[in-house]
Image (cartoon, rainbow, N blue to C red; front, side, top):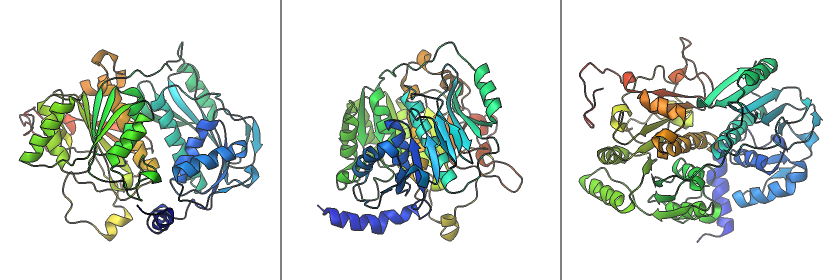
Length: 474
């Protein structure tokens, strides 16, 4: 077991450089209740070290120390010294001349989240006193707010339409900009008689294969809302993992599946870890079938980032077990989630690597510098990204997985319609990019959006063609 000093040396040598220096000298002021500090914790995992939290400074210090006890350079400033200010639920009325981002949750409306940008500061208070009871809405709001706050601190232009509305009952990842008066009117006409903010019931037994950046975060999102979790991964927690996976420094050296099971149990979940790797071989098929026989899951999540997911998806399709497979593209600028409802609709093989999704984004600088000629379809091909990016994919993954667990009639309308249209490949954006012809990569014109693709988007398909795996007409 390495000493704290050895771990700190490794952290500063191998982990801290991944953040870059862009945020390390920026200061975010935070006004709100304790939950708003979760936004600060996300930004700290992106390299931010300076905060102005006023009365919550001591609480934030303790949270930061628990999250990353190896970082000893955090600084706490006065609000007047902040580069930008975040107003979250529970904040008192303030006047500030700093660029300000106000987070609120409209009540009695179909819209989930509202973000207001004030480039020259504001004389205002947050429009909400409380956070939504729905944990998926909370996670989505925390992630989106951290992403916007980071852009504001880095000098990105405030949107021409300074009010952003996020999430709708018809589509949780809907996002649109308005001027303030238009946003008020849109909320008025989207009113509902009562707010649907009840507790989320527990559903089903979930098997997660792969406990890295996606699997670990998704497990923690699902833990309060499922009957049980079985977590599979062959690796141990490394010093690089805690900054963007759901592990702490105290987990370094422990098997990921076992450390994650312990963390899920802290959320009152029944969880168990199994140290194992999947193999795309005859023995791998036998072993995976034996695992399914023993655990009898209601849903399986595949987040290994390896070609073994093709084998696992084949087995799951034959056994009609619902499953969801997720992966991030380069730098997690975009991500992909394929949701298969047992034996229904297009299978994993129908969609993975088969879709025509329109223009793709340009290569990242890392790809241009060292394009990998040995890349194989199905293998993980994302350079390191922050937890804001990979966590966004995991949040979407967890929400889709939970909805797929629910009995058919209880599923949200957006999932029922998506499955009925056989558009069960979800592609999301953490970044929006146009090509030379002005077309948006994957058809996503704003960071935060998610769209769907399906059987009609399979490239080169001809009438009468069938999937070689499930036999379904393409």
